[in-house]
Length: 478
Image 1 (cartoon, rainbow, N blue to C red):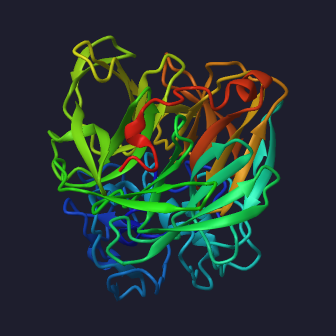
Image 2 (cartoon, rainbow, N blue to C red):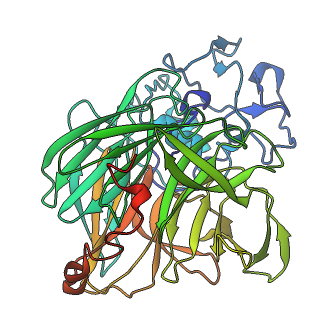
């Protein structure tokens, strides 16, 4: 759910791009991910990382961790690319690192290089009259956001002063809760805290909760109506349960993890809670990708439910495959009650049927979107299913610092929508082909998403499900 994690390990590129593919090259990397200065790479080079990479412009950034060096061509390059997933950031297949860095970086394009820049861009771009661009988290978007008809896009809320990177979204009655990651370390190592803001349905902020660490998961327990906030998806995870009526908070901690990382998101199914085991330390991932959770005292006790190397049926080919889930992330339930796990960097969804029984089955859905050159794999964050013809979608853009409403007169129940941060766009997902059709464009970092049911039947039945059940999740039960 969080493309901000490990943001300090990624490079940054020019922020005034409108569509993709736009850039096919900036730097050459060797097989270890180290930048090769252009003076050492006079001729084009093809290596194991994919397309040809060049350095057509000089980029200077002073606010990224790690040293920069300047070669004889006055080109500033990153000394080292510290994370393998960032190696593809200048290819057509991944912009994840670009998106992470876009909101927290300053860029200076040297004078006299505009012609070279335009030659490097392979598609139309929009640029300011001056090529000195400063991007800040709270800065207004460079491009407008548009939705295809008959969808209507409006802004629900902008980030309150001092907060940034809205991501997870949860709704209880007439209140919307938004978690702000603020660009904090995803393993909690910086000792900072995040905020969860309570909004009314008109977008007015009425209360702010502070939770320790980097917030990434946010869900309302449909039985107890308590808000669960999950922090530190890379390591050292904690859970904070919030009572929205009394504003009380209780912190729970996790023991050592079997997969070596943290925990990212959760879903409630009957009296069970399932949590995604994120940032696994091993490749292949033989640890759990999904665990079940129970509250015991001040601890969260977990048990493996789905292995990161489980057997699954590929929906597109009908073949049996072995999973290797390297980025278990967002979770939701489909209309049948199956658990849907997004393995974000793997560009795929895993649908788990009968999750906690001997009849468990997993289905793999590779994700893609249509480009002029054909289908292209795409990374997604949250997926939301329409539960009623009446309602609207809420989604957050971490970089634009806004939460949006996507509405139309009537939705089709069962339809899936997803926030494709690898696009970046919000689109409709075909569950038989895995193809995501863009609906909202002009985004930069779409992430958290959910469907809000406004039908009368939903209001009439709200609060009745599971009443007096699942007592191990009650506020006062521990």
